[in-house]
Length: 162
Image (tube, rainbow, N blue to C red; front, side, top):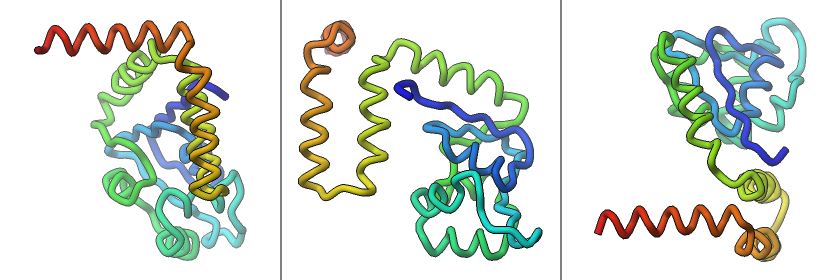
């Protein structure tokens, strides 16, 4: 998928629901919401991509602890350990997610898609290979209409600030 995925968490997310939330490129969570793996408490192993996503976001040791304990993680702790992007007051969640979507609306879908693909590939490639993938991704983007438009907008804003 080329476009970034924004996930909003407005309550408890457990098990596969946690997996769905972790799949987001931006994960915005209400301050009253919670996360838990829940598997150990119900005698199951992870599903929904949790065993793949969680260690990549929080590191192996924290992932092990969360999966073994099934403890509940507050929104603030989830942000601190890297499970989510942002915490907002529950009453402001819908508006904040809307603002995030609007901010991404004018970005280049092809560039955002390249960012997503490069980040995911970075876990299974060497630095040398990743550098090659970056060159292959950026080269066609440099002549795209989106890059020309967005670069001109960026330059105009810098000129006005000078």
